[in-house]
Amino acid sequence: MKAGVAPIVTRNRASHLDLLRRQKAEREGQGITRTFGTITATRWPTGRLEVHFPNGTSTPDLAKAMPAKAIWQAAQRTPDLWEVLVWAGWY
Image (cartoon, rainbow, N blue to C red):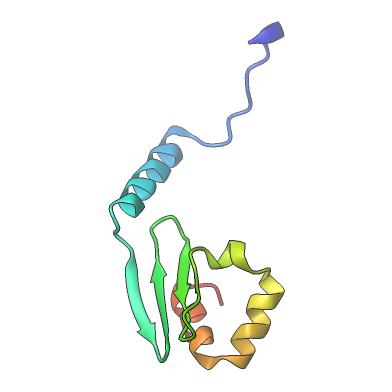
């Protein structure tokens, strides 16, 4: 520590251990998978939402694949996707 300045801590110990526990659970494949009409979705312990569409495409992380506005517009056009987002707690 230069000049006696302590680094800024963004997580406390319990929060960090919880994150490690959820990451380990995800590595072990402990996601919850459900099918909504033609769309299959997996909700992972870290909060990641993996979606498989009927045309063969899939998104390993929907939040990183599309901006929020595009997700909202897609959900308006596709009722099955809307059900996925409600189940995941996104809307």
